[in-house]
Image 1 (spheres, rainbow, N blue to C red):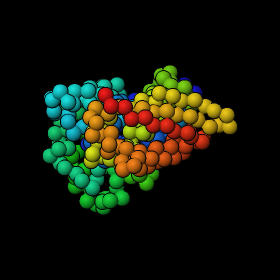
Image 2 (cartoon, helix red, strand yellow):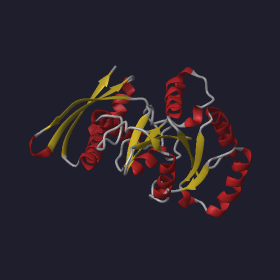
Image 3 (cartoon, rainbow, N blue to C red):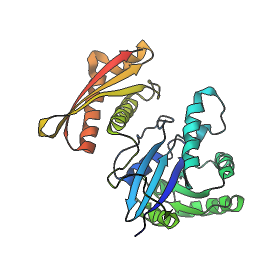
Image 4 (cartoon, one colour):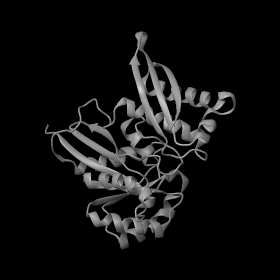
Length: 280
């Protein structure tokens, strides 16, 4: 059988569920999930192989800023459009529970300029009646030529197999870009750093900026399938150090223990995690 490939960008508003969807498709956590705006800052590629077909999913930053020209969002915009430009097909993900038609039309108007096939995906379908979506789908279709509409729940793993079945129909003959055992373009150190960033934002999403810098400085496999990991948390302001540490070091302890559990679940090994706070 000839090998085939399809590149797909997952686009949508912050908290639409893009990272949850790509993690479910790949079967591992490669993109962090958090309610804080634009926790996904880099373009992360998830790899899903189905028989002779390789599907590449580009997880992109939330598209809330798509018409914003400020310096603060230049890198995010660059990563968003890189994912769109690289892809053959766009999945535009919508939170079914909070549909803003005016915002949606602004977004689609801009994205349609790239002249690529668009699937509109209504996520969190468990939170809304499908009957309520029918007039919305009809309205969107009358205004824009959309290739296909899907309803699913990424969190509850509903409708994902049906989406994949449809996507593979668009795959074309090409050599695979990634090997059979690769699930992402990022290495283990990047994923480890992202897991720690996700954990910090889970506990302190209102107090800490999303663009904290985390470096996995040490990763060593020990005897008996144990792993030693050292991570450095770089902070710009001294006040953040006090917040992350917490009273008598209770917060950093919670963060370390929670992150250690996440890493153990993914890597399936006993983890020894050490954290270091560094003021820049």
